[in-house]
Amino acid sequence: MIAVLLIVTALVIVFFVVFQKRRKNKILIEKFNQKQKFEEELSKTQQEIQEETLKHIGRELHDNIGQMLVNVDQCK
Image 1 (cartoon, rainbow, N blue to C red):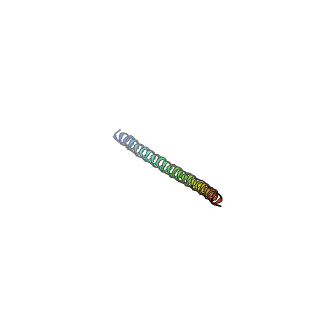
Image 2 (image 1 turned 90 degrees about the horizontal axis):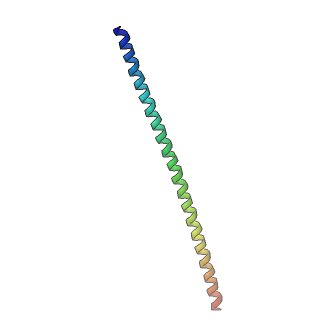
Image 3 (image 1 turned 60 degrees about the vertical axis):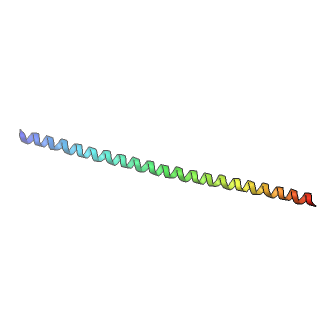
């Protein structure tokens, strides 16, 4: 009877340890996936900011050249 009780106790402990490891692995995988998703979003946002900055600079240059041409034409 004591042997059966020890075996059942050992099985409960083993089951608990295995369950905890699975839970910990699942949490680590979720954390890794969240970090990867965050880095992808950060990269995407940086690219969008860079594109908007270049568009803005392009518009400013275009407008500046237009103003210079108007001024040159008025000086003649």
